[in-house]
Image 1 (cartoon, rainbow, N blue to C red):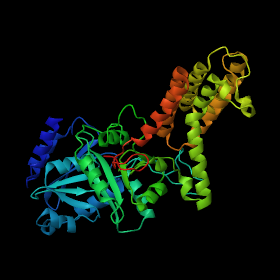
Image 2: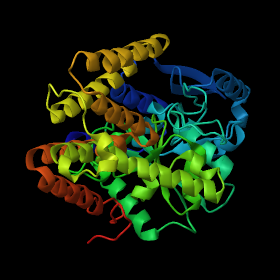
Image 3: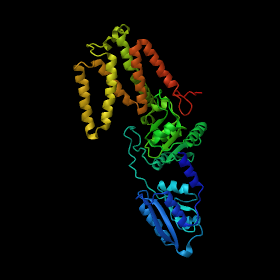
Length: 462
């Protein structure tokens, strides 16, 4: 990594001279022009001077470059401007054009898809940004759907994502700062915020942390950036950031004064700061009236609590049947218990994850019938065979379905780990273990420090 930094510093201090041959020779030393088929070098005669184009095949809009080159070829020798800056104003009929002065900027722009032009006698490189990236349509995300909201979603191209938010917020206070992270990947990272509403202390902290990142690459895009920004404690599984694939949700968060971070090649936005109330929100919460919104949030919160405590409380009552009032006597296991309840619950926890992983790896046209078959086999015949009791299957089925009411996938697994911890402690230590597990869950939430310096309950931590 230190070698890469030294090479970059050397490129920054190497200025572009007026000799096209020397500039092209230096570029040929740095870039594998002969080895890489998609790295194209093109020599032309413009206004009586030799010129060299460098561009990446597949990133350049052929129609645009054809018109630009046609305009350049019409320039006569006596009409050639004196320097590169004048040439951009007279000879390049295009919007996004600038003159680069050092080779580090040239290499960075070229490998990003910008066409670079060296003309003999001109100091500097003319960068023509007529690039285009392969991109899919802005379809609605498969996970984060809305009943009444817009039907567009983020894609893997960062410029498209910023445009989707800019379309919704036509305010001059909307700022989108572009950063670069990774010595090898040099990934584009956009920090978006409303300058008149953002928490300035948090904004400076985020920008400082991004500037201090010393990583070779962001190979996993947004997740790699998240790990570099805030290293989590392995024993606390709760997520530190909120993610969304919907531009309307990201725009609403911007208007609330939050910071949105976009990473190139990632179809989602990272939102800061984060609390437990932000993480359990979903897109529908923004589109319904206040009363409906309040009911949905309350129902989602209660179901979230039940996913954590339902099976541990059931296990606690099974171990202490004298605690159950007669009116709730029906919750007791009526059939013969061949396998201890705790092992049944743990086996079903793993089996549910196995079904989920199988559904993710199964082709779409087969996933539904296979899921139905697997559910019937596990539900009906596993009870008849004596492996599981019907009460255990019922409660685990509720937990499995209730997990999908949680819009955040990472939070769902954090709650699952808390539930497993409660189950094991309850099985080992009875009510003392349940109380200890409950305290651990509360402390994990209260002391889950996020990037803003606050915990999940939005309380400032030292």
